[in-house]
Length: 174
Image 1 (cartoon, rainbow, N blue to C red):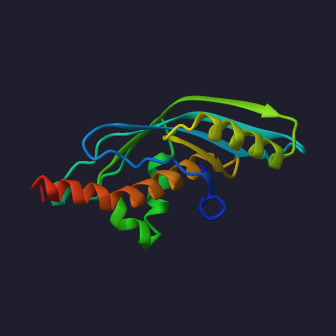
Image 2: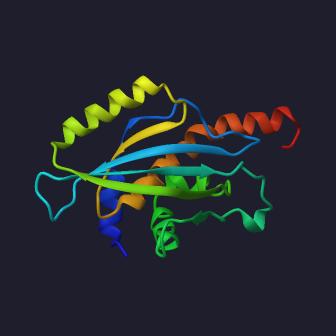
């Protein structure tokens, strides 16, 4: 388990280099591919690139007794503890109440002996050439890489929430 200080450090030092061009779908599932670039603390001149998918289930309107639910699948045995740490950040508390379900899958990683800036630049070029609406490039902290993904998902919820609520209102759900 990462410490509260490590978690805070990861949140403060997670940088989304390329944001997905699309938001979380209101009435369907959404899948984002992530590429997370980190530097292992115990290796000099090495960069770790993790690649995987984050699935966002469609947002649900929940009854008040379920408003604090936030479920994570595939984020490791300490994910709920990380979410509790995240609840200490009031600007994100209202977002957690939406009850989105996120899971990460298809994780792979590779170690590269290249400067981090070169790896990031190459990945940016590759992503820009693909013009994929749902790909993100993130720079984060190796030991707390799952916290970096949680930060990304919280930012995506925040970015998508207004559109989701607008769609619900337009269809008479709220």
